[in-house]
Image (cartoon, each protein chain N blue to C red):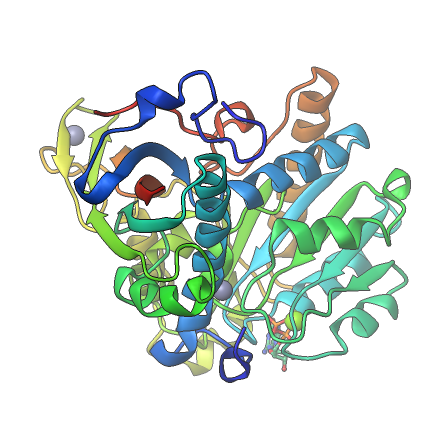
Length: 131
Length: 271
Ligand SMILES: Nc1nc2c(ncn2[C@@H]2O[C@H](COP(=O)(O)OP(=O)(O)O)[C@@H](O)[C@H]2O)c(=O)[nH]1
Ligand SMILES: [Mg+2]
Ligand SMILES: [Zn+2]
Ligand SMILES: [Zn+2]
């Protein structure tokens, strides 16, 4: 990890990058494993599914990726992020509605007894490999 | 599922996973959690804890919200009732572990340099410095940070997030990932409410409920001993519940944590 990032995160955006860097390191570790199993020479594209409640900032992830991937089989891969919708299921009236990250109420009856249907994803969805 | 990485590509089905793309490349569909490696370690940690009937509480907050002060007050109140221990991960002040030890309970300081959160591997390493068979409640004081710690399961049973009245009452709206992860929210330093006219506890609770959180909001002052009874009763209740679970071979886990058995989300291949 480059020295400049070895500092306290994460409240300013620049420093917060450190968090996304550690997430990227986890990503690159997985990608390297999968590339090896498939005898790939190079990873062309990495597609992630990221929801608004995943805890990571897609833009920061994209910035951190080259640092984490440097020197690996994924070094020149393109990182594609597919944002996921935020949806909740209402336990009171049964409706499924759209929501926002800090307002997860039922869009029909307004109740707060809801469950997240989607929006907290932090997933490696697929890879394009060159063998 | 392959053993080494948990993805669903195996030599047997490898040909199915491929779709030809330009220039002889191929596409492989995975759909796996990015932090699966951490999550697997967390499951392992939780198994350690359950084997010993320990309740593990992960404390998270901004720097200075009063995590260590709450631990000190809780230790003084409970140390003759339960065997307590602390894993200190907050690097803000290096002497947090020393502060805890003066209250007569074991504390291990995780020294990671400058990490912005604890992860399950750090906690696992720390476990080997504690005698798990002599602990009823283990507290983990996470790094003071309202962003990162929420993403990393450590193997704890409950997440507690502190919000001190010297911060804004809109913190839950600004940090939804963190406050949504809380199984209980502690409103700390309430002795200062009388001198702070811009913090409205009702407003803090409103922002918390907007996150669809049903977590109890426990208002207290560790310094002045106000409101401690409700918090201590919450701990007693959680310990009893976790022990009942563990006896049935089950486990408590933070309400947002998926079942340990379905940590890896699997789907079929796309073509
Ligand atoms: N007035 C008041 N101050 C407190 C209380 N709890 C903690 N503090 C003070 O807040 C500061 C930070 O507390 P500390 O426990 O170190 O916070 P941490 O960084 O979250 O562990 C210290 O100066 C404490 O004395 C409280 O209940 N009331
Ligand atoms: Mg502290
Ligand atoms: Zn972090
Ligand atoms: Zn509804």
